[in-house]
Length: 267
Image (cartoon, rainbow, N blue to C red; front, side):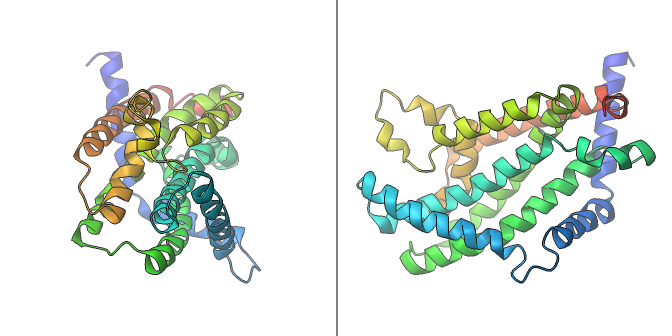
């Protein structure tokens, strides 16, 4: 087995070793949440409350600015915003996925994926709290849910895997190059405006519809949102999301395998 193949194998082995230790990353993620909201009355629901106020306020404003019916726009915006908050938080926190655990990495030999899974579960817990907003908006404004809404669950699972794959990539580059977190943060901010969250894809017209068509994040949002508000299976978005996740996962595993032994020296 040549050196390149061996490093890829090491990356895959490292990835599975991390997944096989949920008692590490799941419990540590829960500990992080408890520590973050220690002595707080509402705990993580403070994030939910602030997010809900923002969605309600901006949803009303943008529906008026874009001349959209509030009963159709607010569920569209609420689901998209809650998902984007999860995606953006995971990627931004993954930029310091190794540097924030520098002391532990230098003292204890854990699979590197454990630290990224810890961040992922932490953000999934916050997402679970923020889903209360979606439930309230759907209950108040509709639409009526059908069995298609259950397709949002595998869609969210695929989006979660994609975020883990991106985390594996950015964590390596951001550890090696300390300017990268700022670059990633700015790219994420730009992508927010290029992703159909505060605007609908049909508003682009035929000339600029490619902005949504070739945006992987638009499809990762759509595979969760479309089953809920449109009661349909977004086949094209699923193809895009599967292909994107596969490519990112292969690249992430390869990078982790290649640079795993160097990360401690970069810290």
